[in-house]
Image (cartoon, rainbow, N blue to C red):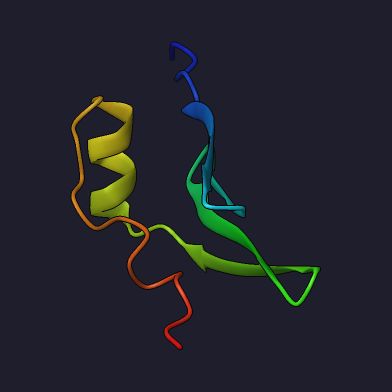
Length: 77
């Protein structure tokens, strides 16, 4: 039996708008994937981390754009 190739993907996006820094990360290793948003509130860094669904992982590995991928990670004020 041939060995199967495990999926590996990592991406980091930094965004700075009017002094508010936001960092978005996507990490896939094998069958496990996470999406993370770091944001700053009151001078302290906060983190919102969620697991990726199988559909999202498949689209990311196939290099397809997913609109609203980080919408459930953002804290609404």
